[in-house]
Length: 159
Figure 1 (cartoon, rainbow, N blue to C red):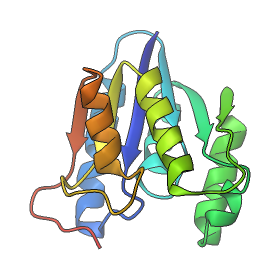
Figure 2 (figure 1 turned 60 degrees about the horizontal axis):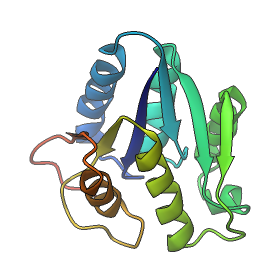
Figure 3 (figure 1 turned 60 degrees about the vertical axis):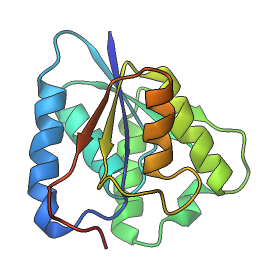
Figure 4 (figure 1 turned 90 degrees about the vertical axis):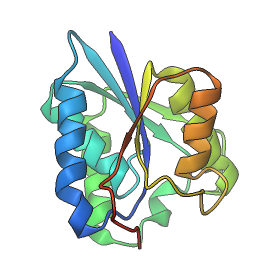
């Protein structure tokens, strides 16, 4: 079974969304045989990846950073998507953190990088805005020698 994980931005500008969606579909549709997808289901890249992975027939493993993770969702639609995707997951892994901190996010991101054969990063290539951000998880995966597929629309700036 091939295992693909995701890291990425919570906010994807509208002008990049179509490109990101098509590139994720190409990566997830392009595999041979069974597929396991790893995601923390954060708003943005994580949820988009998980939705497409399920459409492509992948088994979804959800990595929950903390006990209070649901309370971090400010957008009710994002929370509803999170709950819907979580119900569809075949497996759930919980990090041992009570609160959603940068350390909890880093632990979830490194768990995903450790567990996958390939990491997909919906990333603008800029430094992380906090510990556990996309750039840090990409650097961590690369330090392990994991292949990383970076998806972003050139010339588009993140909010």
